[in-house]
Length: 381
Image (cartoon, rainbow, N blue to C red; front, top):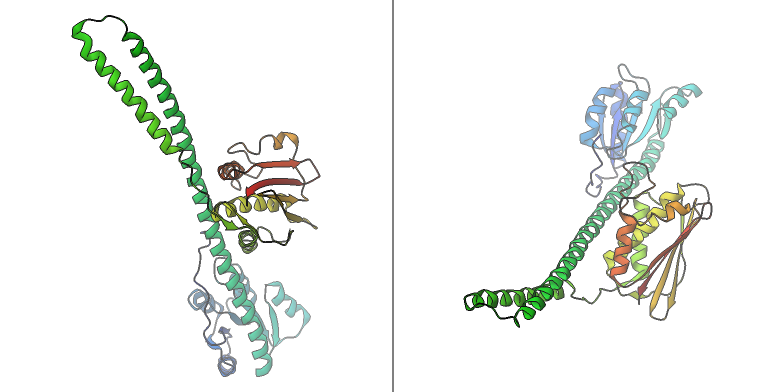
C-alpha cells in the first residue's frame, strides 16, 4: 500500500454526500428523495459492486447499505469500504428488513456504524445520517491536520539534519584550516631560519617566492578560519507558545495518544534560540518519551521549567521503563537506537545535543530501570 498523502481540507456538498445502495428500485428512490429533502447530496446504486466502483470518486460521508443483496452483500461491501485506510473516512449505516439479533450483529460485526430497520421514517433517517456525516467530516478533518503535522515534522527533521551536516562540514573545515595554519606557521618559521644562512645568488628568487607563498598561505588560512567561526546573535522565541505548537503536532500525529502530557509553570518567557531549533529539541525529547511509554495505562510526561539567573532550565520527565546504564552511556552516539529496525535512525538525540550546544545550553539525562527518564536542558532567557 502506498503511504498516506496529505489531502486538501475536506469540503461539504450541502449537509454531506450520501451513497444509497439497495437492489430494490422503489426503496432506492424513496431513500434518495428523503435524503435530498433533508439537504444531503444523495446518489443511489443497485449493487455492492457498483457502490465500491463509485466510492473512490464520490467519497461519500455516509453509505446507507442494504444488508441482503445479490452478488456482494452488505457485509462484504462494508468490510471493503472500512478496509480502505488510505481513502477518506466513510460511515456506514446497515439497512435491513430484519430485526433478528443475528442479522443486526452481522451488520455491526462487518464494521457498520449504525443499523436501521426497513421501513424507516424520514426523520429517523435524517437524524442518523446527519450524525454520522458529522462523524465522517470530523475524521477527515483530523486526518488532514495529522497529515499536515507529519509534513511539518518531516520538514523540521530535514532542516535539522541539513544543519547537522553543515555543522559537521564546518567543524571539519575548521580543523583542516587550523592544521593548515599550523603548517604555514612551521613553514614560515623554517624559511625565517634559513634566511640567516648564506645561499647561492641564483636561488634567491626561489627562496623569496617560498617565503611569499608561506605568508600568503598563513594569512589565507587565518581569514578562512575567522569566516567559519563568525558568531551570530541567536534568534528568539516564546517558550510556552513554541512548546504548545509541538504538543499539538505530536497529538495530531498520534505519538502522544494515551499519554498525559503536563506542562508545569505559568509564566511565558522569551528564550534566546530559534523557534525551529526549540521545536526540534522538544519534538525529539517528548516524542522519544512517548515512544518509550508505549501507551501503557497511566503513561505520563511532565514538562517542567525553572528560571535561574538568565537561564531557563527545562525538564522532560516520563514514568516509563527507564534505561540501563549501558543504554544510557550510548544514547548520544550517532545511529544508536533501541527502537525496532525501521522505526529509529539514532540521530535524534545527537542532533538535539548539538542544537542545544550551539545556542550555548547544556543537556543532561538521568535514568534507571523502572524509574523513567528525565532529560534536562538549559537555554538563555
